[in-house]
Amino acid sequence: MARVLGFDPDEGVVTFLDDKGQPRRLDLRASEVRIASKAKLTSIASVNGTEVYGITPTGTVSRITPTGDWTFEPPSPARFVFPQQNGSVVIAGNDGRGTQLWLIRPTDDDIIKTASLPLVSRGVRTQVGDRIYFTVDTGLIGVRTQDLARVKSIRLDKPVTAVAPTPSGDRLYVALEGSNVLSVIDRYSESVAATVRLPSPVSEMRMDPFGQMILARPADGNDSAWVIAVGTNRVTGTISAEWRSDLPAFAPENQIAVVRGNDVVFVNSSRLADSRTIAGGAKDFWYFFAWNGFRPRPAELDRPVTFERGESTLVRDSVVSIPARDSTFSPPLRDATPTMVEPPAAVAPRPRGYMVSFAAVLMEQKANETAATISVNGVRPRVVPTRTGSTTIYRVVLGPYASREEAERMGRDSRRQYWVYEETQ
Image (cartoon, rainbow, N blue to C red; front, side, top):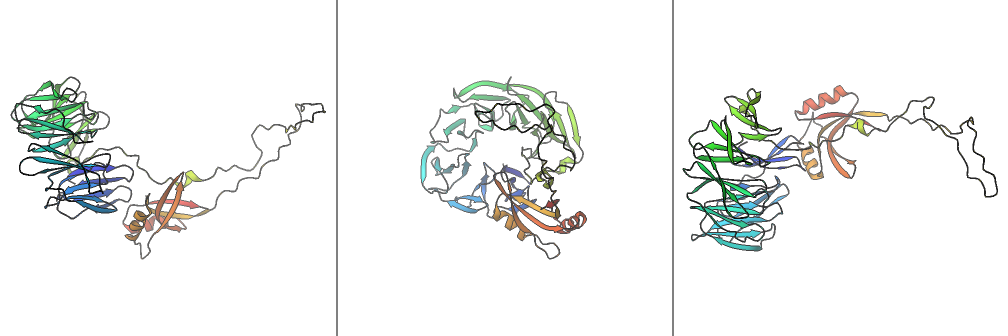
């Protein structure tokens, strides 16, 4: 893994680039890694982890999805592509005199809006997705993604080397070439509202997902990071950290994960003190994300409630009938014998055996594809639909088997990730 493009929490899929620059998908439920495309693409991006966009060598925009691919040929070769949360895409391409922008909505080939900009060198999309800022020689040019309307240009003293927008997009932290001062741009005034003084110029910045801190990489080194507090626009300290594509990174519970030698160390972001060391963790690729880890419910949770036969411990009451209009109502005596008929005892479900499950997904096609790739001692699993509330889950299973040991043996022989559950009838 070289770089994560996005994560789809509904499907449980991480889309990433491998060390050869090819997009791949890691299915956390099926424990599978699949190549998304073998085509040579540049400017690869994804906003939701499902749809992957890239640019072919001829300047055509390609969209790759699990259900099929789609291409779009802009009026001139594309250079950048910016997918949006609402499904639209902003494409940028140079025509020699400047940069042209096109707004489209796949899979429609019609261009919704166009815009012309001076020749730009790079672009950055705000996390909320309502603006894209492009860098020019000595400044920034912003456009609204909804209609490609330009916002006020921001002139700076030197060329831009790095840009880090806050999650809300209300501020942009801009590093300038050869300058030890960060410019803080306010999106409402479209001007430099504050500055942050640093020990030396920086070459890269990473924003905290909550917009509270920034990690800045010194331009003249790769073994440390400055921690900047967004609230005060001041450097709170320096931490020892090797810069890679995945680390340093902000981790849960107010931690910063950094590489030191062969280990990964978690640093408390408030005190900047080491809190935990993962020995040998530097050999792994690190990516922090939130997921509910959707898995099929254990079978025992869906069993009906049963009661032991014998004397009931429930407090019973007498049955009182409604008297006729001309009759006199007499309440039952306190010592009257209860007349409730004891219900028959529930019959416990009989076990059918033990099942081996390899996957539980929401798409039947995906389940069938997974089942077709598994063979255990010449036996292929089947796809069984089950209902959980209003959701249909498609399980890829083998069995039932008479004992858990036999089911476990089949699971081990598959050389796949599996789990065993007891099925009842």
